[in-house]
Length: 485
Image (cartoon, rainbow, N blue to C red; front, top):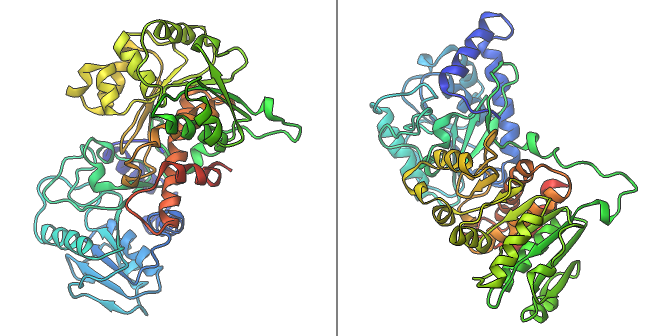
């Protein structure tokens, strides 16, 4: 899904209506149907089974989307609106009529378990400080969300109180668990700091409206899941991608294990894990049987000519002397996609290595600062842009909105969530990138698909475990096959 400022999609919608291709009412009905279908699949929402739907609505068409979606549920509905129904836009009045037959209340809702709260107060055209009664209703919504266990807030197009173009707060903003962005992603939804208000982004397609092409996208399911090539019936392991992993050290064998097992789960035909002799007995005893664990005295013994991707870094530890030079030499004799993660990145930063163009770098913010000290004064998007101008490669800057770019295309990942804030997740990501690159994807596509797959696997694990605070990295591995199968 492309990223466009609000003015672009408004102009495109008006042009569509002016051409008589579709009416505003028909388009709203189509959006409501797609919202309903998307909610059924969204891990943060599909298992909610709400006891009540609470709609906060304004006067415009944003309210109509929220009302139409609420009407699809069979539970009681509470409507908290800034106006009487007769003051809704004509399209929203049509959607409001669908609430007939529901148990409907308009009084301030009491906290209760299992609410679905829908923010339909203001759409993407809002600017300037929030006025009354919007400000009061935003505060009421956030208070209700915070005091209602196992409840979720869904914002339609943009959380009320957030500028859709800049991400600037216009006062107290709705804190959403999921934001359903319609037609395109608005830049403000991807701005630094906006993620605490938007939550996960859920793309709702608008194929009826022609939007211009753009070099920046955010990842949506349909675009990336078909990237992996299909396998011929005669396919065998040597044609399914061979990944060589250089990882692990004393005290950090878990990182190597997670990386290798993730590569297996992501479909690599053969996964070889190269480690130093002192940790070989540990890894050989604990790593999945599908992984070939090979001890080496020196990393110069690691072959690259028969690999389709190489991963360097998870749990590698701090190298010194000859081994630093050996690993540096390996980088430059490697002719296949080269995933650099964790201690691999730290070595590159410490010794000022010039990294080959086939590299896929996966830094978290701290590693990014070591690689590119100027990053601490820049926005994440600007940091990625400037780093790639001086270091041509593929960069995946990790975070709540991971940014993936090769300097020509830029993607934002919105899967996953705060339940992934624990050790080992980056090791899994590195292994999955290596597996996808070995199966024939370009470095950029391998990184984009891996970020999506790991986040979606974590979201599925989170839902199936009944929404705990955290999901272990090994649980993400266990759900990867359900994402890209």
